[in-house]
Length: 302
Image 1 (tube, rainbow, N blue to C red):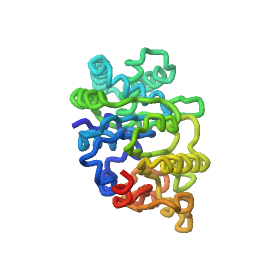
Image 2 (cartoon, helix red, strand yellow; image 1 turned 180 degrees about the horizontal axis):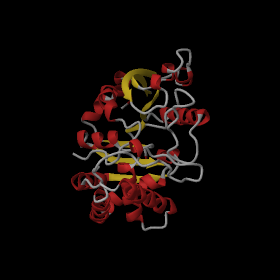
Image 3 (cartoon, rainbow, N blue to C red; image 1 turned 90 degrees about the horizontal axis):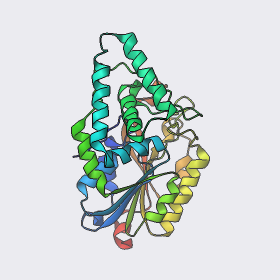
Image 4 (cartoon, helix red, strand yellow; image 1 turned 60 degrees about the vertical axis):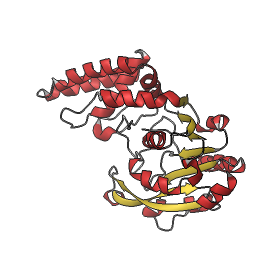
């Protein structure tokens, strides 16, 4: 089974059981289109592809062109990618007893990645290498789109997982990969269609923002623009599920999502957060799964 090939802050592997509970039941036996406009590490994508062989078409998108390039290279040139990653892994592991040289190697690779001057396969390999060796597997860029995460403290991390890369490549053969604003995915939605949205989460506090996956900020206006897009999909009778932070964890009086999605079904589920500058916002917290249907409604719409 293909599984996420990246470490990813906010990866949705732990929410899959809850997502499964709210999925429209008729999709078990019915052909449908699956769309994921903020693909990230693809945890839900790979689970859907494994468990729903009746997905007729899958479409993924992300505004992060560095990320979507990795998906495209894994889909089209997995062996070339594996060859470069094996070399990176060999060179990096050989420096384990030389911490200063190891650190220099990391920052040289980070600088090379930020130049974005290598071929697309090497650029994809650099992305995976940095993800496997940087602090907490974060992907964070500054306003100049420069990756700026420092080196992590892992000892001999797995940089090249050949078996999984080949499994992911096979899974991606039935997936269309887009780059850009999430709204373009509407052109690829054929009924019945299921969208899963995993946008940059609204921060629980000023110190907890880890949504700089792209150089443009995903602020409250963007959250509302996404709600408007969900309204549009609802009018077209498409199904959608959206995950986001539960801002009530930071302030019980904060009704931001309850208000803007007041015509939909706001479900609170438990998830564990491990990355946050504020210790009160780490650990087991509630997150939101918002849908435009109940299972009964889904069956009547289909």
